[in-house]
Length: 142
Image (cartoon, rainbow, N blue to C red; front, side):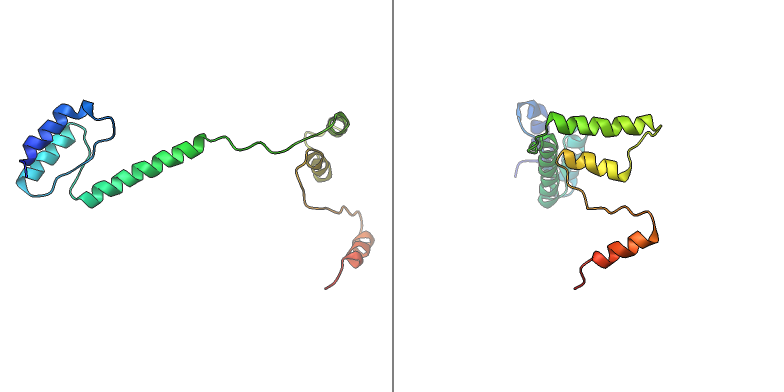
C-alpha cells in the first residue's frame, strides 16, 4: 500500500540491480497514472492490470523459446554413398552440359536424388499413345 509514485521511483532508481526483465502493473487512478507515466519515461514496461503484465511476460517467454528452437541444428540424416555412385551422378551432369542443357531432365534428377538416398515418386516415361495404353493395362485394378 505504498504510494505508487514513490514505489515507481524506487524501481526506476534500482532497476540496474534487477537481473531479469522488469514489468510493472499500476492499478488505480491518479497515483497509478503518475507511476505508469514515470515508468514509461524510464523505459520500464507498465500495464494497467496484472493480467496484461502476465500476458506480456508470456509473449516474452514464447519468443525466447522460439528463438532457442531456431538456433537448434537438425540431426544429421544417415547417409552413405560410394565413389561409383558419385561418378555416375557426375556423368549424368556432364552429359547434360555436353548437350547444352543447364538443367537435368526429370528422370536424371530422380536418378541423382535416389543415388544420394532421397526417395522420389516412381515415374514412367512414354513416347507414344500405344506405350501409354500398354502401361495403363499393367496397372492393377481394385
